[in-house]
Image 1: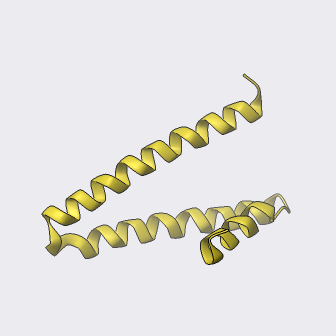
Image 2 (image 1 turned 45 degrees about the vertical axis):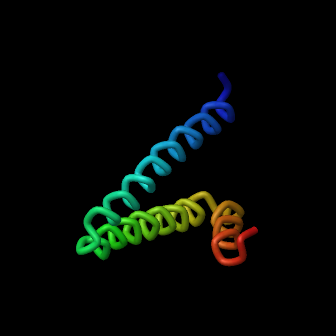
Length: 78
């Protein structure tokens, strides 16, 4: 398996884990509505950390293509 295939597979696995945790989060909030704000805060912190790391690495590698594409997708759904 080459490096690009490993990257593709790793992202696929990561998405699978995120999706599982997303469903768990919604189920947990459904069963524990009083704790919804805490679960939302967990997700907010996760996404913020991910985007901050992406920004840092974009600057480190002097390549902002990924962060620009992700930001555009988040803002405009593209």
